[in-house]
Image 1 (cartoon, rainbow, N blue to C red):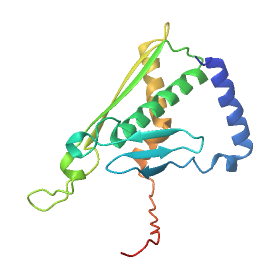
Image 2: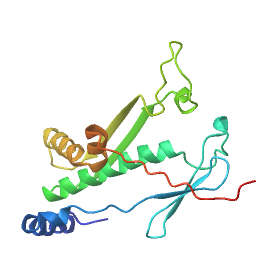
Image 3: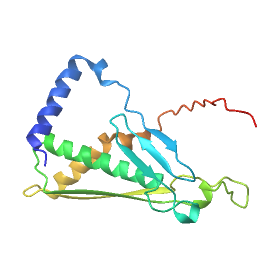
Length: 181
């Protein structure tokens, strides 16, 4: 397990550098590359070489033997929130005994199928709502401080920020030339 002091020291060093050179804080994040493998199976790649397979459930034509992209979305939100909460705790000298973040959602499958309401309104393909549950424990730290720590962590979580702020999205399409039949 990481030592809270080590995390706090790393954060302090980063703050010192970024205070002197704020331009160093803006950077390109590692891209995620997703490649179709047939059917609804996709393999996503990270520059480090890490790979993750996804597939849809059998009800939507997939094999059901991998996590779905939607689950990865929720997992990413949960992992990001837990990471930043742990970082905030470390920066405040709080040694956590337990931290668990569960992200759930409710979706309408009709949206991903391109279906519409009776009045013709498109049904949203994404989640209709998200639920975030945080379980946290730190011996000797009162409940109010732990709740504030979670609130601060959630506000600083990059994924939560992206969900709430709606940053602009640019889509570029490149059509590869193939052989005409």
